[in-house]
Amino acid sequence: MKPKILIIDDDEEIRTQMKWAVAADHDVAVAADRRSALEAFRKQRPEVVLLDLGLPPCPNDTTEGMATLAGLLTFDRAAKIIIVSGQSDRENAVKAIGAGAYDFLCKPIDLGQLKLLLQRCVYVSKLERDYRRMQDEERPDMFEGMLGGSEAMQEVFRTITKVAKSSVPVLILGESGTGKEMVASAIHRRSAFKSKPFVAINCNAIPENLIESELFGYEKGSFTGANSQRLGLIETAAGGTLFLDEIGDLPPPVQVKLLRFLQEKRIQRVGGRLEIEIEARVLAATHVDLTKALAAGRFREDLYYRLAVVACKLPPLRERGDDIMLLAKDFLKHFGAQNGRTGLAFDPQAIQMILSHPWSGNVRELQNRIQRAVIMADAQSITAADLELAAFGPSATSPATPTGVGRAGGTAATSGLKEAREQLEREMVSVAIERHGGNISAAAKELGISRPTFYELMNKLRISKS
Image (tube, rainbow, N blue to C red; front, side):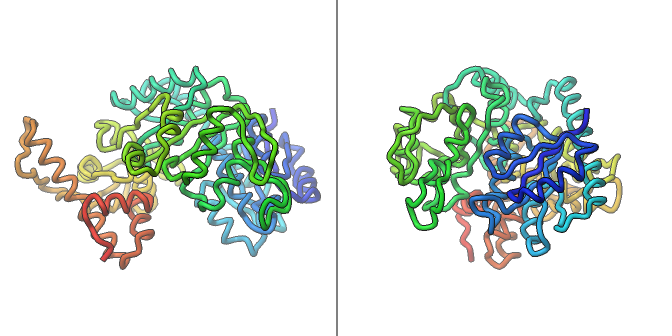
């Protein structure tokens, strides 16, 4: 069978030219906008996608293109997506790669370069899919692409298996970087809705004045700039699964409309009068303590109980025991292969640092540190310096035992470990803030965590920006 390619571009002439150029060696599907692209991707499951960032209804900016990229990667994190852009759009293409795209090509397209890139993408895609399938078949600690042998993660896997059989809302709880979106994707893939759309939205990433129209859509003329009717993400998810990440940041007026949808399965577009019946499963996630948000009046109690029919709590990486090294070795193998560096291994000091590091950014931070180490390491042994953990962890040659911590454990040991972890976190955050002159975004990026998580750490540890 020919490998499948999906071409997404609003220019019919460009779609036709690219299809003609690659049709001899590939089974080609085309789409002109985000909705048709996601539907074609769901049905065809192509190995490679060619994506133009300028899509309707906003062809002059990258809003729709980036939203399409996010939707494709949510459905399949391993998708090989090539951004096709003009020379003036090169900066946005690079941003798209940072968001998960595989590569980019500049217009006008060199057909020889395109064919070589497609061959490479198809080959890498096949290797990765074969590897994941082999892992799922042979490894009991691998579940829907998630790795975890600890009892805490095995309990998460059991919960996913149970709730996937129903259509009830699920609230996924956990710190930033623990893998909440992967859990949502796994529930969808194991559900009766798996052949339908999986639509994800990060409620924290959309400006408050736009989130209502993004979720519920709008009618033409409903506000300045609404030049055409637009379907919201809830309608796009019809028949499938809607994943609302960072639900705790949803503005109160939108909480009311979402509650009504959960109760009645009906929505109204912004500026619309007709009620539209929509059947879609809702999964939600948050890293904030919703019980505190309820007490403070920032989150509706009735909405909370509608969303939390079943709650699935993801453990932080620091509480997953042997999973830390299990994940570290898996990331090392993956990024080593990706960068043509096989046979890499951690030296003893690096292992000690990995096990003692607090991992405030959880799995995302671990992945970030190891990807960097693979690129920066000069030898086959990955050192603590390659991981950039030496400045934040205890001495690699003579690990200190905090006061009150004995080998036998007990209450004093627990207290000492907690104090030691907080001290490590305090040093990490303080050093990052000082190094970047108080720039919180840069400091959070260095530690591999989100800005909200960084601010939470500052508040918890009573660290000021100055």
